[in-house]
Amino acid sequence: MNGFAYRIGDGVAESTAVNDAVSTDGAMVWVHLTTTAEQAQSWLESEAGLPDYIVDQLTAQETRPRCDAFDEGAFVNLRGRTEEKLDPSDVLASVRIWAEKGRIISVTRKHLLATDAVEKEVKAGEIHDPGDIITAFASAITEDLDPVVADLGDELDDCEQQLDAARAFALRRSVTKVRVEAINYRRFLNPQRAALEKLASLPGDWLGPDDRAHLAAAADRAARMAEEVEAIRERASLIHETLTDLRAEQLDQRGLVISIAAMVFLPLTFITGLYGMNVEGLWLAQKPWAFDAIVGLCVVIAVAVTGWFMARHWLR
Image (cartoon, rainbow, N blue to C red; front, side, top):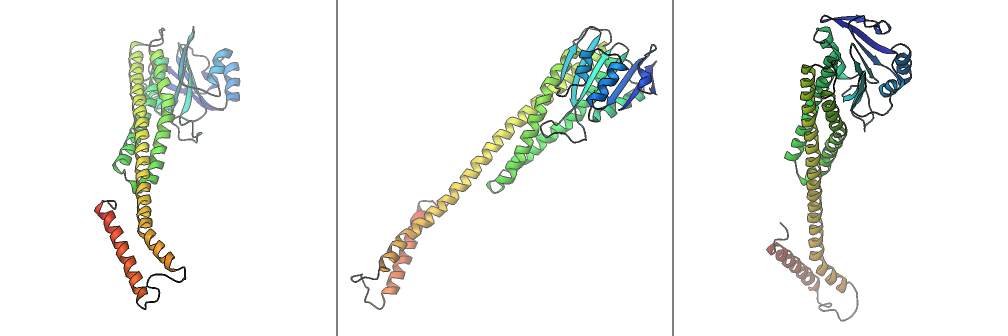
């Protein structure tokens, strides 16, 4: 089981062993575990002494951002970015947090990038209570996600600037990729906003006024990102429809060219087929100059049909 722990008192953070951090001794303790569900369950039950319903929340297989208040504290589930491999439909890893006065326990299965930022704040002495750690997680996660969402918008802007029927297939793949990513982020940003807003309004003296203000700011930022990914999803749908129209127009144009070519050669095919029957009575069949005459007639007909299409602007 991987993890670390800090004992925080008087603005000073002291690193300690995970098993030695169970007792607070008047100081606040932060324990972070990166482990499987079975290993975490064993430690949380036997060493941390948490009740079963809290252990189940911290080690659940499927999770969504949420916040639940309990008598002695609160359970918070947030989603953030990780550099480890995830399922394509699950683009964000979860951090499950149990917070109570004097103690906070966080559990992850994948290493969150936000964890490094929070640990850095702890070492710098900027963390004083459990509310500060939850606020640091919320702020670090939203700050890390903000440029990613902005990059999705920029990528979609590039696709809009390159709209062209000749690039329809390549652009459709790019737009579809952006749309899928926006949908995946949207699945978590909306409930994450609701979880942060609920957490900011929870009663309890372990959340200070500054913590609530920072949580409200993180919730507002998550709401803005949720609105942005929703706008990206809608724009991607419109661009996809535009590309479909451009592709259909391109196919129509090609079909028109083929139809015009068929119309030009249709009378020529009739004449050549008629004179290829090799029967008596064909006009000019006995004349030595008949071949030249028929070829000239075919050329005249082809020019005339083509000129008629050009006059009607069908070739534009």
